[in-house]
Every structure is written in C-alpha cells, then in structure tokens.
Image 1 (cartoon, rainbow, N blue to C red):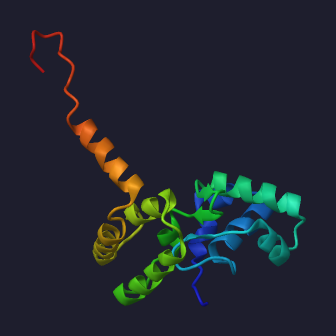
Image 2 (cartoon, helix red, strand yellow):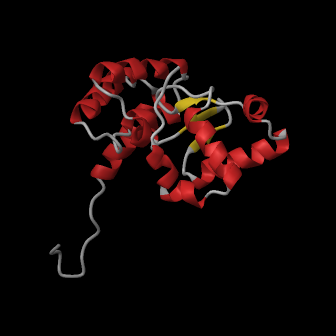
Length: 171
C-alpha cells in the first residue's frame, strides 16, 4: 500500500542519534512491508531479515536497540510493535482516511498496546482526529478486563484522602 514518508523523520532528534543500520531499521519499522496504517502491527524479525538482508542475529539485536532507543513498545507474547509517535509522521489527510486507517486495529488482538494506541492523541494536529479516536475508543474498549482495572485504579486514586498537614489541620 502507498504511504507518504515525511522527510522530517530523518531530522528527528532520536533518529539522528541512531547508527546507520539503526536508521535503516527505523525506516523499515515505519514504512516497511510489515507495517499497517496505524503503527500498531504484527512484526517478525525473520521477515525483516529476509527483506533487509542482514543476518538474523544482527537483525534481532538491531530491532531491539532501535525500538528501545525510539521509545517504541514491543509485546513479544503477541509479536506486536507499537509506535506511539506514528501520527507525527503519518497523519491522515482527512477524517474519512483516518476512519479507514482505524480499520487496521481490528487485526490486533485486544491487548494493553491496543489500549495505549486508542488513548494516544498526542501527535494529532486536527481536533477531528482526536474526536474520532475517542469515539472509537469508547465503543471498542467497553468490557475489556484491563480497561475496567484501569478505571478502578483511577477511581481509587481520586478518593485517597490527603494526609493531615503540620499546620493544625489547614491545607
């Protein structure tokens, strides 16, 4: 599938700090054939090795070093990579395209990374995308066990009483 690659990616502070093969890996993880339209996708180091031509042991080390350096997240159990800054370099053209992009999330099992994805509005420049993501998030996350646990923890934090002050009860 076609996707534009923003040239500002190469001027990103974290990308500039990567060694040459790290930059290759970062570009592969952003726009390679395993990616999708949302930056949350299944990833195989063996497929990457076949595509890029680097020995598998080196590919695995390079992948780990790159995703950690870039502050991306990896779930080995479901072999899924999440790029929180995805929309910084891949913001959709408009609302209809964004809704189309969100269809890719249905290929990912319900997991903690999916929850993080659905709550990440940080890199959108248009309010309409934030609104659409919230709507999808509210519907899709209903009834997810770890979503309910998060809400319970948030509520517990809200009702925690403040400790008494040393100023005779005044705060």
